[in-house]
Length: 462
DNA sequence: CGACTTTGACCCGCGC
DNA sequence: GCGCGGGTCAAAGTCG
Image (tube, rainbow, N blue to C red; front, side, top):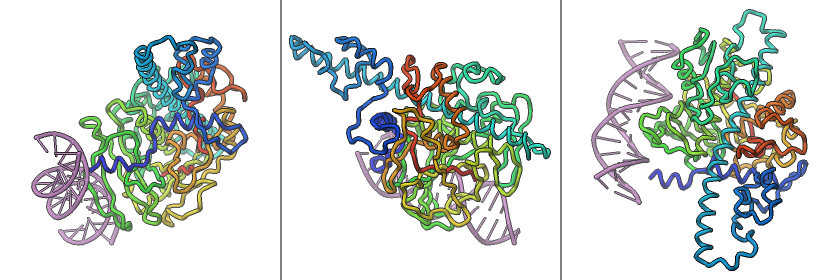
């Protein structure tokens, strides 16, 4: 039954989508909106290594001589003497190699994408701190002491900011985002639904931080006719209820990729616009994730962490979470979903410049569209934005992209982001001609940005 | 036969 | 205390 459902799921966050989007973006000029219909696969190989491999004519065995749209053997000149058997064998080997490369690249891509996101988060937090310092922060409110970077950044501190005292956990790079809370955290002061939870101490226990993240929810709104968006994980439905104020039932799923995985999600259609699917994630996976799921999970984890960090600066009961960037607005919980015992961040993928305006949220739950002005400044040439999402299309950006785009929409972050990217990519300052940096690690250039949607993003918190 | 969905019952928190 | 609503459980049914 679920398999039937899966077949009709919205192919939302599959890693191959990343690659295709990356490729599509690379086919676009910086200021051009038109996308060539032809999509080159794995075009991010057109970075240094790719060029190098092409400089070495005849080196068809080069591991980077693969950006040929599966034209794998055609690039080998003068091989007619090879027997069909050898060709087949070689083809198999080539496919095997490409497959592993693709896996590796996808992993790296997701990994770096997450790192980029963390850096952006850090900047947001820094801005928040600065604002509090400049003005309202002096009124005795608790300041956002918890560092998002400390909480989330999987990189060694030296690579990010030598002034940050966070512990280094190199291994984290290979870990599932579920492990992200297991980093240092100094003070958490979060509020959900009028409750204030304060966790204080120089180093809060890992359990406490995990609870904080686990309790934070990430809600995703996306247009889809499919009963459920495909996020790379396996889910088992364990319940369904009619929720008050919504004629559409709410379905409850839990992750079945590992026994005891605490991750759950709720799926419900928007009462006002049934084409909108609202998916709410809660918890952290305790198992390795496939690349597609990793992208999703990193984003939801990051969003949750961001939400919590944003909440650290307020104890207000009206739900307004002051942040410098203004990305996050605490909302009354959508009537279509459960009342929030815990803070929830909503990622709205249903709006954008190209989308037909609609009114989905109930009157009490306004959304906050984020015009991505300034965003193109962030992306190098080949990494320019995708065309805006059309309503009803399933060309939906990944969550990472969405969140990143939302944050990046603040022009004030541009410089910091660029610097952060260059740091991640190996210290090379980004230039307009720089396609995103060093791929020597097998890391595709500038993760996240290649697919940043030009439209579509609303971030809000409940 | 195992994995999954369905669905009514149950539990719990909250507001009155 | 009671009712309401959200969330979960678990038995029964379904499917491959």
